[in-house]
Length: 404
Image (cartoon, rainbow, N blue to C red):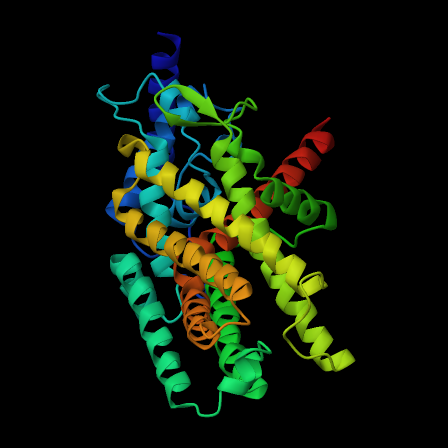
């Protein structure tokens, strides 16, 4: 009863704010156009008004403290909260207004629907984002297969390989400079597209927030790297099935992310070996590039396999079904990258090496080409949202100290 009274009070206060007469605007004031909200964004704004009156879930994650710092929810606010949400499901299972209640509050699903739209809205180029949004799995596998086939044709046309295969000489198949140009182009494109996308996102959601301080950056980085908000707000983990809590999703995410970073470190060290020390691949099994790559490859098998398992059995009531092709497309490329890389390592001194190399390189190129448009982008956007959250918290604390 008390929460219903609070909800009614909140609605009355919001209505009075909307009815208040706006102050006169100077004739030379600049008018900033505000993009209309989509149906999904409007639904989030509606649910946030209800949650802001209730506040039962205030301690669950970063979304609800950020929500309480607002009386109204515009497009930028909704996009910010959507990317701050980790979809742990704790609020859905704790909510007294969840379906079948007439308020139909389902925060994880509502935010997931908006989050998917932000990937497309802020994508660069936008057409690529829209294409991946609707055909993520098909596009990922088709691109990997097409690039691998193209490179396989290149190996078929190559002559004089018989003496090189036993030495596992990759550069006898594809010259080093050619590989550097191919992967350098794809990598720079991914960095550019992600950079433009997150810059657009930050410009919209962080307008008027102020410059980030070093403590705010450090806190946001810690929360992003440890996946703090996948603990369900109580340390027991996400609700993957019904009311059961588990930390499996956080652990599989860690295996995936740090496996990816170990593989990236392997490539970086190999580049250093090549250019700084004149050491060319292939490297011994106990060398730094091979050890890093092997550990990363194992992480990229276990992590994505676990995430795929969770994705297949995830509660559809609190997830956006439209995201599944995108999710599974990214997971498929990670699994294929790791599996083909480990197979190449194991069989690099055999006659299968040229074909395995072409397949592996095609999959890796497809992975990097699609990074800006799939689930990898959500990690970048979420990190930006966490940074804004840390800045807001410090500003709130500073105001509280000042008022005291």
